Structures are given as structure tokens and as C-alpha cells.
Length: 240
Ligand SMILES: NC(=O)c1ccc[n+]([C@@H]2O[C@H](COP(=O)([O-])OP(=O)(O)OC[C@H]3O[C@@H](n4cnc5c(N)ncnc54)[C@H](OP(=O)(O)O)[C@@H]3O)[C@@H](O)[C@H]2O)c1
Image (cartoon, rainbow, N blue to C red; front, side, top):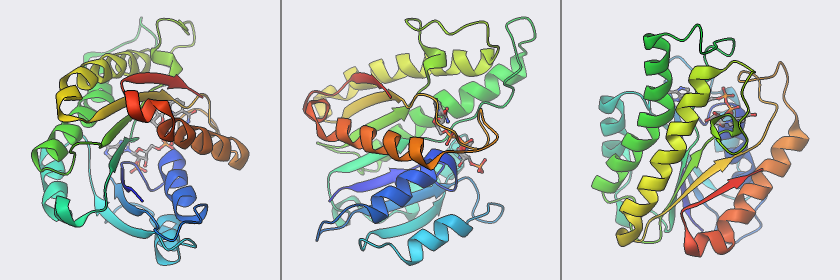
């Protein structure tokens, strides 16, 4: 089974990926999950630790610190990981960590600081984490990079008039980053996906409560896509 590196794994979709990967598989060869959280000291890790201590399918889960907007933290992660040869392949990187810090912000109230903050986390974070794991040799032939985008960043869907301007701009930029990553990594045999989960009721981004049903459907669909022809062709966008 693959090795999964999941950013933003302490809550929301990231935590649910860990939960489903560590509970639903019936394989005799369980996955290795590297769950990354912004801060080991200042994050509520109760739910993640519970999964890590008792994965029902025998998954090997370790928790690592990764502030995706800090190059120093990214470098520390690559140093703290097991060597590439000791990790089961293929390696799947889920660039899931993201922010929608000012949902009420429109194009008329946009600020330089707020746009920079969203670009740092939602665009440069996935770019720099990917680049560091390439340089360390963890991302290699047959690896998959999976960037979590949003319909808010789609020109095709053109979801405007609902504020969230800085978030939308950052996700549009992430989409283009993924196109370039797919092209740039083609020769190395690394596939790149950009996926929009649709609306999933996590606590902080858009909703005041979350739905286990939509969580289950999303994660099931995401991994169905990963294991389908997209796995072989790469560089594809998908929406839940
Ligand atoms: N939920 C939806 O309906 C929806 C729709 C479209 C796209 N998405 C995308 O899906 C992804 C996950 O969404 P979600 O709803 O699960 O969000 P969430 O509940 O707000 O969780 C976000 C996660 O990202 C982490 N994070 C934020 N900034 C970080 C940083 N600089 N370094 C490391 N970790 C950081 C958070 O850590 P802390 O706990 O420490 O803050 C948290 O673990 C995001 O990229 C989001 O844009 C979600």
C-alpha cells in the first residue's frame, strides 16, 4: 500500500483522509500515513492521536510538524522523515492544508497583506512542500501530488458575487500551479492532480458544522479517482 503524506491532518478533510485510510481498507498490507500538523505544541491532536494509536486496519500513522508557509518548517519535515527507500511506494502527497481566512472579503476590500497570506498558504505552501520532497528524493517515479483546490478558483464555474475574493484568487493560482507542476514533473514520472472536493461541511471554512456523510462520499470519490485512469495519465482536474 502507498505512503500518504497529508498536510493539515489534525481536523477537517485532512483528518478525515487519515480516518478513512486507517479504518476502511481491508488489505493485509496497510498504508503508511505521515500526518502533518501546523504545530505539534499548539494543536489539539486528540482525534489524530486516537486514530494513530488504534488504526483498525493496521495502518502505520506518524505525526509530524509542518507549517506549510515556512521554508524552515518544510526543511525540518524532510529531515525528520524516514529515508525514501524505507517508505512503501508509491508516495502520495496530499497538499490539503489551506485557509479561507476572510470569507467576507470582496474585490473592493482586498488588501495586500491578506492576498499575500492566502498565496503563501494556498499556493506557495503546496509548491514548496512538493519541491522539498522532490529534492529529498521522497517524491519519485510513480508518486502522486494531489492539490486540494476549490470551485471558487474556477473560471469555468465563475462563482463570483459571494466575496471570498482572496481565497478565490489563491485557488485560481493553485490551479495554474498544478498545470505547471504536471508539465514540469512529467519527465520524472510524478503525476499531479488538482481536485475540488465541492462543499464539504468542515467546521471552519464555510460551515458551522460538518457532515460525516459528505466526508465519506468525498474521500471515497477522491480515492476512486486516484486509482482510476487519472493515476496513469496524470495532470487532470476533478470536482466532487
Ligand atoms: N470544506 C470545503 O467545503 C472545501 C471546499 C473546497 C476546497 N476545500 C479545500 O480543502 C482543504 C481542506 O479544507 P477543510 O475544510 O478541511 O479546512 P479546515 O477545516 O479549515 O482545515 C484546514 C487545515 O489546514 C491547516 N493549515 C492551515 N494553514 C496551515 C499552514 N500554514 N501550515 C500547515 N497547516 C495549515 C489547518 O491547521 P490548524 O488546525 O492548525 O489551523 C487545518 O488542519 C483546503 O485546502 C480547502 O481550501 C474545502
